[in-house]
Amino acid sequence: MTFIFELLIAFFLIVSGIFGFVGSFGMIKLKDPMSRLHAPTKATTLGVGGVLLASITHSVLLEGKLSLHELLITLFLFLTAPITALFIAKWHIHRHEQPSDLPDAGEDELWATHAVEQVEDVPDHSAN
Amino acid sequence: MIKLLHRIFPHPHLTILLTIVWVLLANKPSLNSLVFGLLLGVIIPFITQPYWPDRPKLRNWPMVIEYMLVVLWDIVIANITVARIILFKRDADRQPAFVSIPLELRTPEAITVLAGTITMTPGTVSCDLSAQGHNLLVHCLDAPNPEDVRDEIKHRYERRLKEIFE
Image (cartoon, rainbow over all chains, first blue to last red; front, side, top):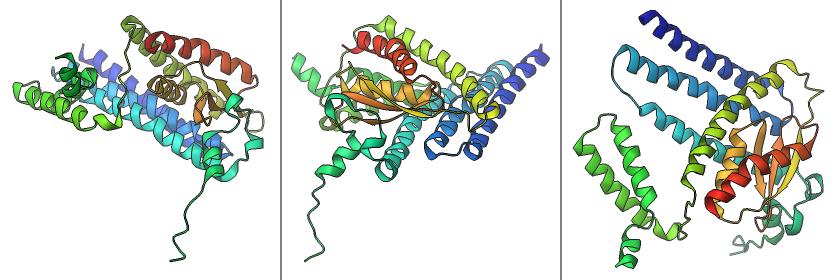
């Protein structure tokens, strides 16, 4: 029986290893910065998820203890990964995209990053 | 009375969530961690109340469960799709594209959940919101047909979120 459990745990670890590798490989292979953003956001979900599943299975089946610590890591990743990706994407739009390069923003005319640039009216403190 | 309760517990769901998170962090169910978690669950929503004045109502609880299952399933599929594109597709054949998605959702919390979901699923990353929050800019890793991506997001996620929040 222990053998089957170990097989299951090994399976989860291998899955996470493969997806972790693909995520990192994508960083090298994909050429444009926006596409590079895709690779790591995917690796965090299944790559990390696999390790966490393996960890839960190990503690429940082999040690006989219920450990749900790992669920929290998933929760925190789900909160932080999209925000980091959004920050990087907004930086890219701010520095490298013109309003004319992006698709139509509908009734609002401008995307938020460009709209902020247009109303920018920063008081000049360097004078005094 | 109800008003007073609302002032002390501005976000009852957040209180419960924080308590559960604290008990899980302690990783050993005990009265000690439960009481402290509950204490944090009351204090944190109370002092952060000015930053989150709205009280979004979740209208459809079975739909919340359905939404979570759909998203988890899509994440697994997404990983396989993206891995395929990264490993086997020549970079020149890939067609990355920005897609503009008109939003029907108006609740800020619902739009946040939608944007987060899009980032975590099939080859899409949400990049920006339009100036007044009526459109969402999404970048696709490989989208020969941008319209398909838009329709799928609207049908799969936005429709369900609309039922949950609005």
